Image (tube, rainbow, N blue to C red; front, side, top):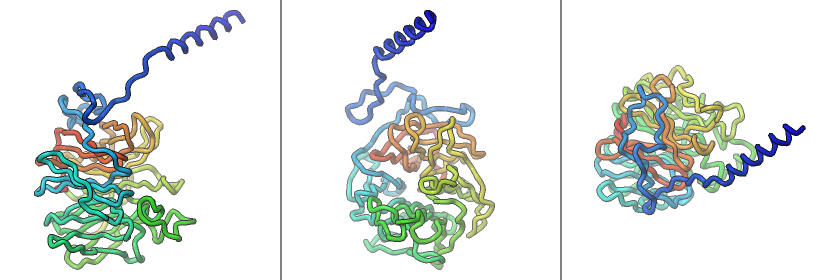
Amino acid sequence: MTELRLARRGLLAGGAALLALPAVAQRRFGDDAPPQRYPDPDIVTLDPRRFTAPLGNSAIRRLHTGMQWAEGPAWHATGRFLIWSDIPNDEALRLTEEDMKVSRRFRSPSGFSNGNTFDREGRHIAFRHLHRDVVRYEPNGRVTVLASRGPDGPFNAPNDGVVHPEDGSLWFTDPGYGALMNYEGERVPESANSPRPFIKEAIYRIDAQSGQVTKVADEPFKPNGLCFSPDYRTLYVADTGASHYPDAQRIIWAFDVDGPRLRNPRTFASMSLEGKNGMADGIRADERGNIWSSAGWVGEGYDGVHVFAPNGDRIGQIRLPEICSNVCFGGSRRNILFMTASQSLYAVPVETRGAHFC
């Protein structure tokens, strides 16, 4: 009994000592933040042999904040600017490379657009929640609706998309989040008792010549971000279905690209890390075939960007203080990783390049 009392006294003393220790200061970002000592401790190398992109003398920077839910970054190589969405504020913003200045209301109203991309001619393509369509902004200022329905009927709420440079086809996802809530679009009556607003969530392709819309896959519960491999033989798709479907896996899918079709659906990577299960959202490939995925909904030490080798192994992380929604490579050399994360836009130079022009 005496030994038990002594042990308890020692435990309480140890706890008091811990409470007396100064709290570890959370990393600060912004103009008033102190310089970050190199190498940046929030760029984590899990496999030094394969994760060679980190630079010893670069740091994560917060370029802008004050948004409600930042999404859909896309880089315009000729104009040398980045655009992205603040979905609840119904606008798209722009950052110009020459002065790193951020301008609001690049598109306003934006139709609560989520994802953005550019086609081979540099025209802006947006995936709009409110109107449940895919549109292209023309040089003369007009707006062309590329698609508002698929073979099964009107879309739920298109989310994200990519252009195939060889044939100009547009591939996009329709998970339907914008039709489930007024915060990011317009909640429809059909979503009151179902996580599926109208039709089965799916992946679609728009033919550049005919404009025909084809459903190419519907295996993911809620297909979200997507990207091609550097050789365009594989399409990767993030599945965020766990937000509404208890049976959904927290994974990134891979599909073989067979001309206008997708084949061989399979798991590319799991978002489970040390027993913590978050979700991927926006994804991009680098020139080595690594997949850079936004990650979130877990907390400190997980949220940010997870980097996967071509075989699906996790090889690196970029830790952010906010949930990361999407990523893209940009800058004149396509060697800056831009990250939209909840209320902020972050960037970090890396020693690799984006595999694609947008």
